[in-house]
Structures are given as C-alpha cells and as structure tokens.
Amino acid sequence: MRVLIIILFFISGPITAQAPIDLALDTYNDRSVPYISVEDLYKNKDGYLIIDTRKKKEFLVSHIPNAVWGGEKLDASAFAKAYPDKSKPIVVYCSIGVRSENFGESLQKLGYINVYNLYGSIFQWKDKGYTLINYQKKPTDSVHVYSKEWAKYLQTGIKVYK
Image (tube, rainbow, N blue to C red; front, side, top):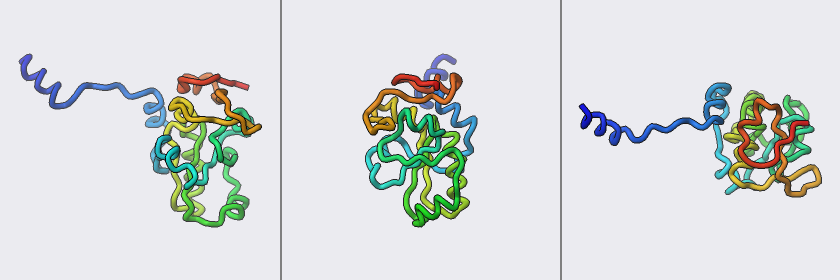
C-alpha cells in the first residue's frame, strides 16, 4: 500500500496550494475577459492601451506607467470617441482584477475585440517588482489597497488606505 501511495505521489506531482490572489479571482471572476500576465504586459507594454479601472484617488496614489484612468464605470460614448479603433489591444486593471473584469465586459459589449484583464492587476505588477508611478509621474512604492480586506493580497510596497 505504501508503495502505491508513493508511486501515485510521483505520478501526480506534489500537491500545491493556490495563492490567495488566485483563489480570490476564481471566486469573484468568471473569466469572461481573457487574462494577460503582468510579465506578458511588461514585455509589450507599448503595444496596449492600458486602462486603470479604479477610483481616481487610487489612480493618483500610483498606477502602471502609460496607463490612462478609465474610472470604475465605462463612459461608453466618451470612450468610443477617444478610442475609435475597436481592434486595438486593450488591457484593463484594478487592484487584483475583479473590477477590471466588469469594465472589460463593458468594452466587449461595445465591440472592442482585443480586451484583456491583467491577472492580479496592480498588486501583482508591484509584487513582481515592476515600476509604478504617482500623479506626478514619479516612481513610487505606494499602492492604494482599496480596503483592508483587499490589502492582504498585496505583498510588497507601501499600503495606502485613504
């Protein structure tokens, strides 16, 4: 019996626990907007329109360089006027990727065909060591964590609550 258990262990591989951010995304998202990893975005960040879908106060604390603030709710007519090319690759992000999925769904309903949700969003971006900038376009370690509940998903940086 022990030999069978050991063989099954090596065949199936070690059991690994899911990271908390993975569990949260599995709980709150339905993957209606395909994910892009922070590594893939970083490698080709100039190839995407990057949209921050958080509250303005969160965006002002820090955001991904070259990101534009979109707000939590899509203003369809203003967006379509500013970005008429519906085939342009777009990446949406928020704190971990929940609010941005909703924003991305709205873009898809408007006919945008290359919309991606940044997996782990700004928290994952920061935790992977990539630069964030503040409202003065200066590098910062500060990240608005949205709430104390969401703060547990950010492992690095200075957590800002206001």
